Length: 197
Image (tube, rainbow, N blue to C red; front, side):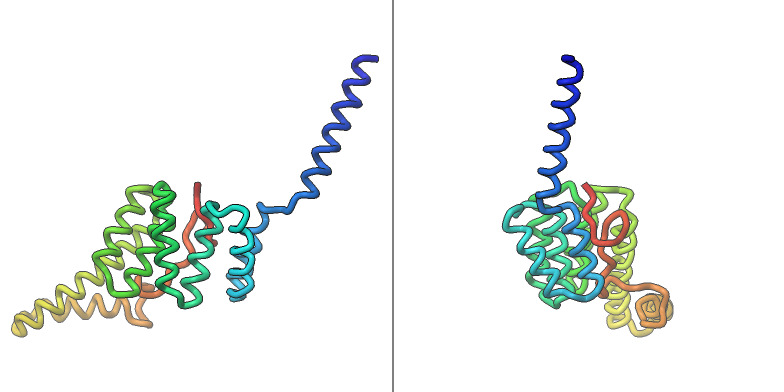
């Protein structure tokens, strides 16, 4: 009899917990919904969802990250830089905000800042391939600047034009490289705009 009452009580508690969970908003799906809106180009709607979510959970790194991606995609570079920079301060263990911050710096031609920021991303996660690729792009851009300066100073140098041409081809629209000046895919393990924790 005692076992029967315990079993009934346990089932009742389990049912009550399931009902309580179903009544709560499904926050876990919210970032997925925002990512879907982002991929569909519905930036205003995505930002509305992010801001509503951040009212109740202002420190959520995933939603703050998505906010930065939306800002970047909306052309609000200064706001995106501020969002990603704050994320790197609040969550220095996450490499993705560093990567996106670096892409924004590179897009502004601030290649030294981009390099230092990507090095932080790699220090945080040495296996983060996207950051390594972007760092390679930054080094290529820095090499292009150095070769251009060398050619400007010594027009008779015959090896520099060839090197400069190779780098320019890498970043041309028909070249194989994407180039750091273009926005990188949203980072994360799946490259779908997630922040790894």
